[in-house]
Image (cartoon, rainbow, N blue to C red; front, side, top):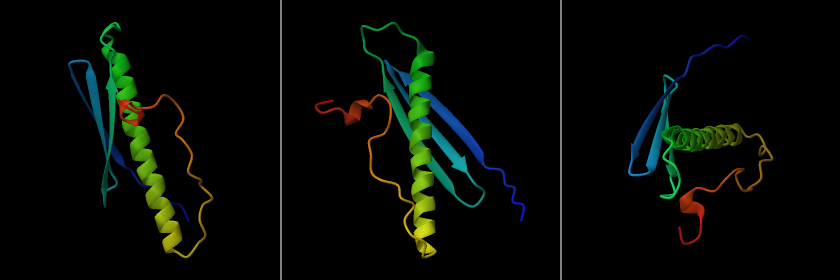
Length: 103
C-alpha cells in the first residue's frame, strides 16, 4: 500500500561571541520534535562562521535523528515486537564540548 507524507523541517542558527547554536524543528503534521546543537570556536582560530553553522546544524540534526529512532523503537516495542538490536555505543565524530570531562 503506497504511503506518501510531507514533513516540514526548519533550521535556526544563532551565533554570538564564538558560539553557534542550532535548533531544528520537525513538524510531521501530528507532532513536533526539536533537536539542538552547539559549536564553540577556539579563540585562537580564524573566525569562519560557516564552520560553526555546519557543526551546530549537524549536531542538531543528529539530535533530531536520535529522537526519531528512539520514538520508532518505542513504537515497535509497543506493538509487541522485539528490540531492534540497537546497542548503546558512542556517537561517531568529534565530541561536543559538554561531553568532554572538565569542559
